[in-house]
Length: 214
Length: 214
Image 1 (cartoon, rainbow over the protein chains, first blue to last red):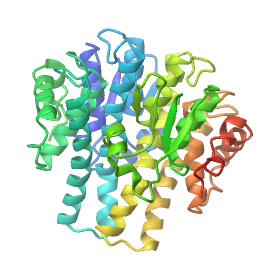
Image 2 (image 1 turned 180 degrees about the vertical axis):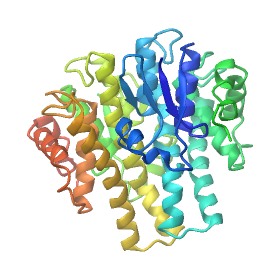
Image 3 (image 1 turned 90 degrees about the vertical axis):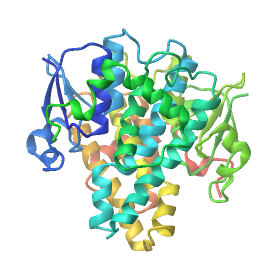
Image 4 (image 1 turned 60 degrees about the horizontal axis):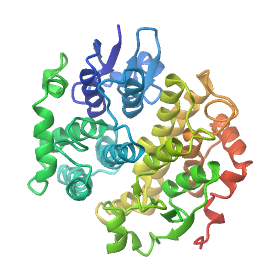
């Protein structure tokens, strides 16, 4: 069976769980506890040389890494329902929205970076929290503008069905809430997130619904 | 004419230049000087709400943001030569290699982050350089492993023609060299980079070959 190596609170693993659920694919989960450092075990490094999660291992042993690449793979191999629009312009828009999260916000706030701030740069808790919130605010400011003024937006980031953009947005909002970021300036982001959270695929992918949730 | 809003030393703009050149597409460049803060002008924010480069504006006025989304758009609208393999497994591998750079290394080392380190966290020059080199080393360690042990590698990151992975790798190597990172532990990365640099599409995309190179 397809196996997802992840961690309940990893937002990259969360993305893949949403994609798997939207596609109604069967999979089992193999937790890699990031707090205990299990991402750096030999077994995990063999799957994922970066020492990260998620990795998706398919029925026939194919090992896939990097959450957006995994989601696109799932979309190509299981086209229904599509995670990207049919037109090139729409696809570019959805990928850009996804990448605002995946290339601009999340990389600055993940565990390895926060650890570096504390251990190497001796940053205190307040400054670490300010860092976290700064990158979320900067990214969400841009996202809110894009979602508000671009014609492609609908009940979801693009149109009225979930896409790769929503798959990235919802885990990022989860992180923002966890670190008590003020989201009052982002009504569009909040509305879209609420629409996503009304769907079973998103509910069942949520961190608190995972077997390793502690 | 298609217009690329970029900056000679922006590695995200550099990626798009390589893609445009590989596709033999005509385009003009409109420099946005990041050192002078031109990314935050009203005109640039209208194109790019994140206040970043690159943006690509097509003949018919379509505005595209986020370098990987732009490259995929170019690949979908101008399929030859392809920037991604034909098979889903190969595509997943190339995207994962690209994302190691675009989601793990580059986001931590771009200008806005380095500025935050200095201005907000009062990090000195040595610690800033150590930060820069740390994320390159961590990412390149993983990339070298992936490129060395995975069967898909060839004269380029995947097979014997350039793909999206090489489009991301070469600008990252440029940055690494600029900050005098030790690349001796990465023979595979260096060989692939040399193969890329032997191609006109890469040469003509290089920072020093741009009209705004200072």
